[in-house]
Length: 303
Image (tube, rainbow, N blue to C red; front, top):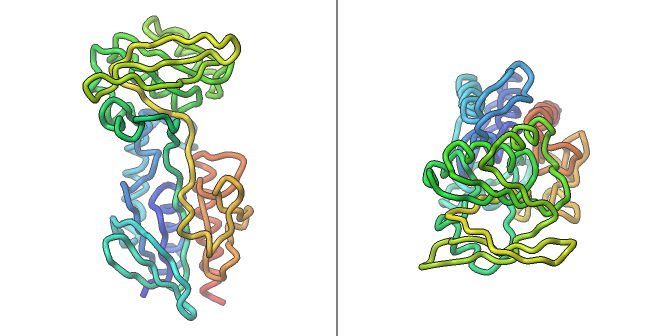
């Protein structure tokens, strides 16, 4: 039996663990993918206070190490259910484990959105990727397409431009939604082409792998094909809260509807990070949620 189980080991979950451990509570953190969360795949982060510049992987490692040094227990398993059992909670995993705690913090994060086009699922890993840090080197000397126009898309496109002969950014809006500094860096790249107000309508396939994309201009209706050896998706994120919606209500988009208090309707359940309905999803706001949720959980336990 633990005082607190944290579901998710991104910045929100690990910050929650750190604050709870410093308050003298026993904490188990359960993560299904990799400790550190989505930030671990960012090639460079420049908006974390105290770090002029740091790689996402380095930041994730430091955060994980800090929690473990304070005594956090870590399990790499996929949580499939959390159930209230008297005054405590049963947390079940896909691997068959069952853990118990007196309070639960849901920091489940988000996953990558896809376009929902035919063959998309089959092409993931066969030409479609979500991470230039992980897979960019596979396309050295080749042509790639980056779909999206936010910070992640622009950062990944810059990384790809260092190894690819050409990178084509396809953005459905008439402007980038990422930071102007990143847009300025993109404009300086001779091997990066930007196509605004355009959507991808089809993945082109040869011999079971991606060979390009068909795109359509939103205003003119003009269609064209873009040759590409690989396509990288950065079209947003979606929460994975369905398994826990009986404990904490969600909004129309699937995010936990909890406010800044990070408390759920079920006593002893708290939510934190990108999985929560909020205006800004950044490392600093995730960490803030983690601290708030942990302190709320500690007050609940102490009462």
